[in-house]
Image 1 (cartoon, rainbow, N blue to C red):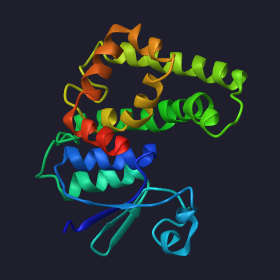
Image 2 (cartoon, one colour; image 1 turned 180 degrees about the vertical axis):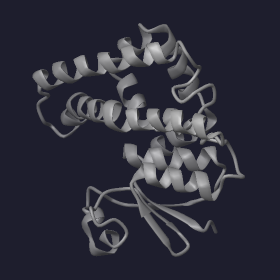
Image 3 (cartoon, one colour; image 1 turned 90 degrees about the vertical axis):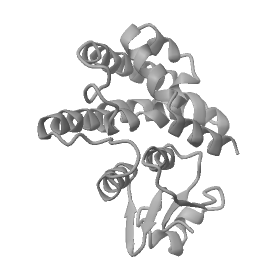
Length: 214
């Protein structure tokens, strides 16, 4: 049995971000389903793992972690000899990749999450989409993608010439937006489109998508 346990639900983008990394690193893990509809993430047993009552939560022996990006960094260092090398060894290249990891967390994620909530999730819960919120955040997304198009004229990936955490962290929210009419913003920028096609075709991501559909 795998020593690593990941608690969550495949529908959570944060859970997806954590487990796609485990697949990239070829690290075995045990998936522990959390029924969020039933409020399992707010029960004491789960709060012990994540005091904010959010997924995912990871256990590796006596270590307990939450926050998907922190989980990915831990796995990258703890299992550095396995799978894909997703953090550069060179200090300057590592610093560059770190910048774009911050960009994903502070520029792309907030905008894409709000758009996903308005366009995809609200209708699922019988709520009304706010067109003003969509318009405002779509304008912000366009600005982010313009920066990405320029950056990708300098290197194949956001963090440099090799696939890194800076790219991987985008996958869950990116996949959500590709299922909406916002896909045109990605496809109209040739370098962004090539980058999207590349990272969404990775075998590790295909395994996560299969888990979602299961």
